[in-house]
Image (cartoon, rainbow, N blue to C red; front, side, top):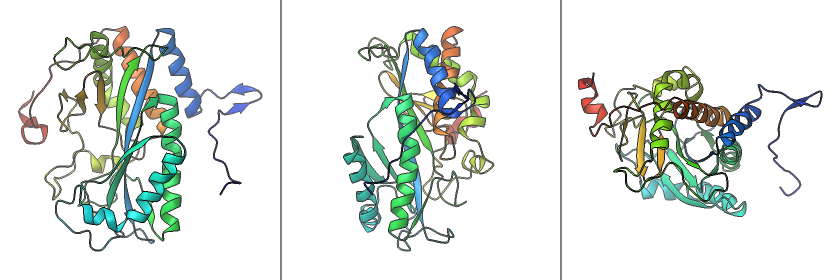
Length: 297
């Protein structure tokens, strides 16, 4: 609809910013980071289910494999919806680069290029609106609910994060000499996130349903893909924090109920506190936390 626009904005009252408004909260934390010469860049992995109109079941009755991750047939049966969403992202210049069927029946994920954390938060807000609107056009509903079905893997919203110089030319969390490619600054940032994980959960996992995703019983696929410990590892998806590549972290705690602005503000605030206090993130663990986490003390 060319006559309709969606515009993110800052909330003002009496010509003054409302400090409690989520978008303003994030900008305030970003200003603190900028005072230290830091810019947080993030990318997100929003998972969602396509369900029937009354919300009682997934929309595709043939999507019944026990381990459906990357199921091409199920993806193609929803090609019209997924391709329209992806085409919309391309038209807006977001740089979408991946669409896939996820670990649960009826579950999908679409990824686009990372950006500064404010722009990513704006995009995530619009993405949820876009996905729901296009799904309705096709007679379906989309839900980002953390755990819509007790027997299926829930919907996470993993956040990939790195710190950059203000001119965006240097990744400050990168150190090529480190085994994982993480700088001392990066480890302190990570330490802050881990130290504040319990408090962050109120922001990253804000509903009762959120905790049906965390520590949920193992699904048919063999894993919940949600963290159950405050730990980090290398390229290991069973931890709260994964280091998938040099210079960046994947924070796996957050889910689809999180407010995008408070989500980014929470991670950035925790990380900045870690930098200020030179917080040690502790020992890296290279084990399957689902299978062996109970051995850790």
